[in-house]
Image 1 (cartoon, rainbow, N blue to C red):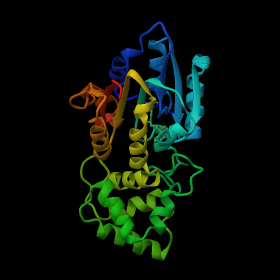
Image 2 (cartoon, rainbow, N blue to C red; image 1 turned 90 degrees about the vertical axis):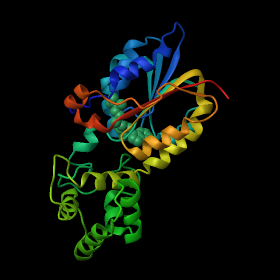
Image 3 (tube, rainbow, N blue to C red; image 1 turned 60 degrees about the horizontal axis):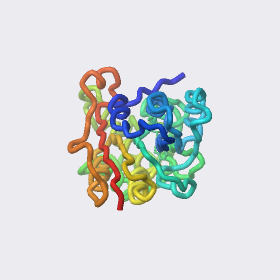
Image 4 (tube, helix red, strand yellow; image 1 turned 135 degrees about the vertical axis):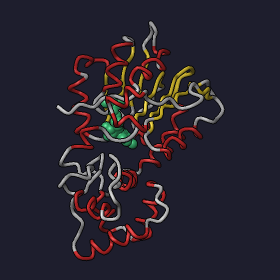
Length: 288
Ligand SMILES: C[S@@+](CC[C@H](N)C(=O)[O-])C[C@H]1O[C@@H](n2cnc3c(N)ncnc32)[C@H](O)[C@@H]1O
């Protein structure tokens, strides 16, 4: 089974020490993934009931198996966290967002996220949605592709790469991740360990899953669903996400518990390179 190492796990458990109680506490893991963080929360806080949300039905199946020992304490929902209020009308004592993708999505040959794979470009976390990376790469007008790369990959002059994509797709559709990877890499002399295509792939993924808008939607609504004293923790992996979180926490009723974002230790990054860009911000809700 594919492993997913939860990022900043000890720190997360520590920040949710408000869940220590004789009474029932409600914890929302809105990016359940494989349930790594949630498992630790359930073990450490016996009175916690967990609401687990993930957009990806295949991921939810894996989480259900992993958390099967806690059956009565967990309920599962397949939806985007930006829409949580369409389904849930309860108040939480703790909510966690651990943004981005899980290891299965990233390395699976069928999901079309990874630049090395021969699989069809896809990148949808929810495979019932229509827009996929294949449509973005093959049908977005040049100006839209430039916007995606400029805004989400922070590329100042994306025109040349976009033109190469347009030229390639006029000859034949760009079907696989590998084909797109080759087009992008033809512009770069490979340096260091990080594939230059990484940020372009991430930008397309952000577009396909509407990731920043979902985060903004969530942050506009969550406050009315928090009990006083509830904690909200968000782990982001992209500076745009971190900025959205930072500004959303600057509001009445919020006490910030992390003046500066918490980042993983050198040791953690050595064991789990995916953690290298993680930033954790935590706040406590004090009421309207
Ligand atoms: C980094 S993983 C979470 C890993 C998890 N904390 C663990 O320890 O196993 C992020 C997960 O969030 C899910 N996800 C991303 N955006 C989402 C959204 N808008 N709504 C619901 N789930 C989302 C992804 O499908 C993925 O499974």
